[in-house]
Image (cartoon, rainbow, N blue to C red; front, side, top):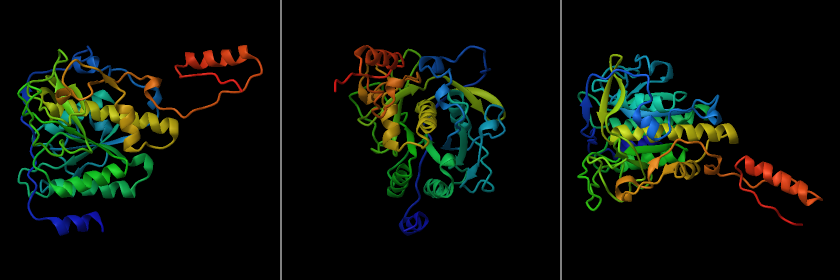
Length: 348
């Protein structure tokens, strides 16, 4: 059955998703120093291993200011599934989506960003189902180099089986879904604020927020299902009209992980000449983590870390060569060790 037909057959009530409440601070102007959030997770430096790659990621949100000077060079195929204007009009009436997109581009400036506008001034309730279905069909129609490899979902609401089905379909296509944990937290790990979907689903990567002191942000929802943490408090980024503002929330933490995922897909494709499956990409993502002395209900495995390290990447076993003399074998082993490869010698 086609996805579009499945949606039509199962539509029974509108889906009411919402943006989490977030704090806004005006008056920010870009400075020459590296922002604290990029410095903390080592995201300021590019990866040589991704050179020449431009993976596609979707910001599914309130829209994006596609003319913002930071974002304009990276925007492709803006898509609007709301009643707010024509299909390519992704005007951001709120600012949330533009801010999220700016964080992603600040973390990985080579990514191509596809804005998907889901939030409308007068919502019908079908935007989220129709939007994710559009992504499924898009992936079926494009070449592998242009497929969507990650979707940023900095929003949440009640459980919907159609959305769940579409998320699983996207993951089956090799697209990772990254969700914000929610901003209903009370600063405690022993209480659970679980009613935030799709973040509470098993399949997506769910992101909690930390502050400048690398402590769990008090607003960040806690529950068994948080996978990772990223900076979320007082994050400076783009704002509609070419401006900038500082916002706080798990919505701001999520694009830090989203951009790291895009880097991982890019580096994998450059090395293996194909994109990874979601399982393969997640196995690498879980290794890009700084351990924190905090409860996993708040930060999952820990704080993301952009530092590139070959030891974080799985390699196929390769035999370097067979040698008649032990010293030649040892020389080859030492050279491989210098390249940060795990090595061992076998006597035939």
